[in-house]
Every structure is written in structure tokens, then in C-alpha cells.
Length: 297
Length: 205
Image (cartoon, rainbow over all chains, first blue to last red; front, side, top):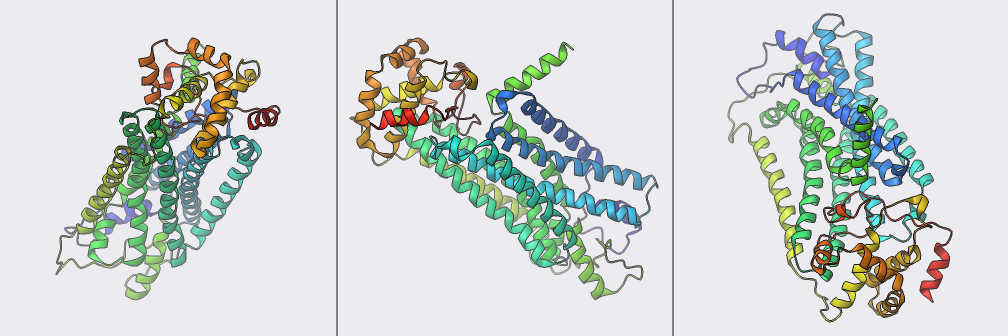
């Protein structure tokens, strides 16, 4: 993995002129902390849903899918950190076959987590859309069986695509496919949420004239979409620049911030439970019950 | 990142400067990037990207708030009181705790479904509103429940309604309803499939 090579070859690297756009290096402890927090949070969400019978609804299953993909992303970072530590302590060879295989597996884990996040967010938005616009038929459209099938299809597709992307990562179409998923999904989610927002606005307009409720809705929407955009767009742009202009000095300066961009993705895994899962009072209650019950054990 | 292998492949073949080249891991040995003769600041892409992102998100927020401030073109003030009554009943029914196993034991379950049905119809077809209104007006149970459930003060009821953003979200307790806002993640009402066709037929008649 890149970080493994970086930590090893930075010592020997004299060809690069370090006075121009030096690579921004974040301490590994920060990554480690954020990743562990992300894993714990998403684990709590998963436990809360699986332990409570009344949370076994399609909507919560989609939130669980998002929690799983965030957890995989954080796990990827933890595994990578462990590999780096082992490498720095000398237990691993720089280019051994085990390291390359482990690196491939970790890379595919990362791509799997990315794709899983993207599809989970899309499916959550679609589920909310159906909840609002096809409310009466919701329970016949979104059955538990269909939920499980949709999630199985999504994760199978993500796993296959992740493995394929890692194998064929040296082809440009792979990168284009990968980076085009982000804007496509963003547009999809934006359309769904804005349509839902317009409906909510028209209803509050009929019953009251205070804009406070609509302002809250606007803030919530902005937070949902803003967090997604801020956390994913830098990395996607990095992949694009890396593919198309690696030796351009401007692109190189942007790519020197790779670790910051990676950290933003980790932060997304930490923030997502707060803006999706813990917004639900039921899930908050289940979480509190879990905490208080564990105190009495 | 494995996607960087592409770069290492191409540039290493071009430069051929590394004798110990392996096709996988020559990541940042891309070759020296010359930073001379730059017309703009070297971090211009970084700055431009983040500024553009911030502008986009702020623009999106302002568009959403502007949408909240501009009025709906077909707002009818004459029917506002009627709709408010229906919205009252609808909202108060939605304030019930969600207990799937007790859905049928709840009194007024049929009323909630009929109200829900009325609500959706009100949104889509205003001409059916009168029929629904008659149905709901005849249901004294609904009014009783609404009276019991409401705090008894019209102002608090109105405050509760003002915070109502999106239908179809059932809350576990009455107090949390006012705090919920747009896109709160609550499951919709558990409509049991068995009596639903019968109720729908009854409403449609």
C-alpha cells in the first residue's frame, strides 16, 4: 500500500525537491483514533438494530448497511496502520508476496467500503422517497424480503466490483467508472431529497406560515448532502488528477494532500451514524437501553 | 492506493530511471515534477477546489431557504381551516407510539388509516377532500382521541403542527414529535395487510 512504501522510501528519497509542495503527513495516531471511533460507533448502531425487535424494519436495515460500509472503511485504515507498524518494525519485507497479497485484499476492502457507502446512501434516500411519495403502498413495495434481496444484490455487486477494480486498477476506464459513480449518486440523492423537501415545504405552508420548520428542513438537507460532498469529493478528485495529470505541478500539489483527503473519508464514517442512525429517536432509545442495561451486568 | 499503479506503470516506462522497477510498487517515484515557471499559485487547484465546494454547498443551502420563503402559488386561504382540522387529526394520530403487535388493539386504527388516506388524497386531489372531510367529521372517536392527546391548548397544537415537516414518520412518544425535523429516520405506520383492503374499500366508497 502506498503508505507502506511512503514510510519506507521517504527516508531514501532524494530525487524529489522537498521544498515544493511537500507531502502533508498526518501522524498515524490520528488515523488510528478516528478509525477506532468509527468502528465502535458503527458497531453500536449494528448492535442496537440487531438486538431490538422493533428496529427490524427495512429502513433500519439500510442504515445498518451504511454502518457496515463505514465500519469496513475504518477497518481498512486500522489494518493498513497495523501493516505499516509491522513494516516499520521490520517484520515485513518491503515487496514480499505476502505483503502484496495483503495489500490487494486491503485495497479491495477499501473500494468495497466506498461502493457500499455510495449505494447505501442511495438506497436510504430511495427508501425515504418511497416512504413519502408512495406512503400507502410503502409496505407492499418495501417488504423485508425485497430489502434483503436488494441489500444482497448491492453487496455482491460491490464486492465483485471492488475485486475487479483492484485487479484492473491500471486501466483508465476503471478509474473513470469509479469516479463517475460519485457525481451520479450525488445527483440522484440531490433530486430525491429536494423533491421530498419541496413536498414538506408545501405541507407546512398549508398549516402554518412560520418558516422555522422549513429552515430546519433546509439545514438538515444541507448537512446531509454537505457532509457527503465534503468527505468524498476531495478523494474522488485526487483519483481523477492522479490518473490524468500526475506530473502537472498543480495536480502534484493537490495530490500532496492525500492523507488529509483520506482522513476526511474516515471522518465521514464517524459522522454518518450521527446524521443517519442517531437521528432516529427509536434508535437512540435502544442505544440508551443498551448502555444502561450493560451497567447493571 | 492501487489506482496509483497506473501512474507508476506509465511513467516508469517513460523515464526508465529505476533499475529495480517492479510493476506494482513504484508509487511516488514518478519522476521529478518541475515547479518552475508556474503562472498561478502552486496550491491553486487546492484552493479553487475547496472554495468551489464551499460555494456550492452554501448556494445549495440558500436555494433551499429561498424555496422555504417563496410562497406556493396555489395556496388557498379559504380552505386553510378545514385542512388544519384534517392535519390536526392526522398529526395527532401520528403521535401515537408505534407498536406493531398492538396495531389492531389500538382503537381508531381504522380512523388513522382513513385519515392517512385522506391526507394523501388531499395532497393529490383536492376535489376528494370534501368526501374525506365528511368521513373524518363523523368519526367522533377521532375527535375524542385528538382532544385527549392534545395538550388542550390550541397554541401548543399549532406549535406542534408548525414543526411538522414530512408526513409518515411515527414517533414513539408525544414529546419527541415537536423536535423531529425533516427526514427524520422513523418507520412509517405499520399498516397490516389483512384489513387494509377492506378499509381502503370502505374509504373509497
